[in-house]
Image (tube, rainbow, N blue to C red):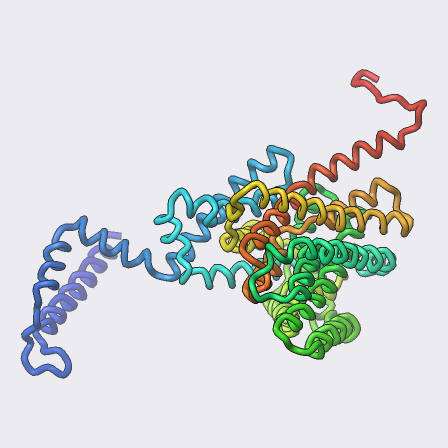
Length: 489
């Protein structure tokens, strides 16, 4: 041991002394391209050298320089978003709300509505506009991974059993709110449309804003309440999936019209969606087990090769739908649907995907969308009355239309009203459509803020209404001779 220590000290001493001699000799060499090593030092450089002479000044300068690095800024943003999202979600769960609602609200609180208002300098430092692009891409990756995990939890055979309900209810939950939206546009066009916007474009965007269901938010609410694998949960997920694909297809038509383009491109978009789904379900899905191999499907831990193939399928599917124009998350969802079920492969794969996306990446999606939302653009009581009218019309069209249609398809009133409540969940997915309408010069700032508030309110009311309809209608259907049991019965 003593000999080893002596050998170690000898090697370190000789090598260290050699490094010192070489560096000392090299410090006197002239710079490349300069014959005389006489550095020029101006007054600013001298002043900087004086300021950095102290250890505190050097540390401060280093920290300030490193804080402006894009990677440091991204880490700071992630830390702030995840910490605040966890805290607000915990508070909302204490109030009986789903955690996802707290995450949505955390995004709004971190935006210019509160954080930017109370601490504008800190807000500009943390969420500088020039630094948000990496965060946006990070959030989209999180949504895609989460929707891939959601797709793996869905049973296509059960979806086929509920196909008639899903198609009828989802399309009714779009067409009825669209009718209410264009009717409301008649009243609001003169005072709330952007100057120069046509009535048809304004009315179509009002219709879309009333009809969108926040698919990821709905799934998170179902999972948080333990309803995802129930019959109601699977029906709601199927209706939302069909409805959102249809709604985004309609949005493509609306955007094409608003840009004064013909509807051929929008029709091609829907045709490409149908082709994509058909290829994924009838061509890719039957071949995935052979590509992965039977032995790989039955392993306890998926190999790196299997994970590479799966990730490749997810990325390719997300890229296809993003290119088509209906957003990458739908491609990731369909990729989850086609994953093999043999040997519990979906469960083993889902453990590796869902946790990281739900805890780390998905809150970033909600927070980033909230950062672009500013509440407080309403200035008088008239604006707030119009906002309340929008909330009421949106709820009546989406919740009422979905519930009535579900009841007509054979569901009982309790599940019909709960399904309508779930379909009324708009969340921050709607903000994507609203931002499109605002950027195209169709929606004014005031109606934009009203629709944002409507989206948040209709999502927050989902939990209480689910509980209310579940309890009240169970009590109403209880036989008269059956009395509530006491704790000692």
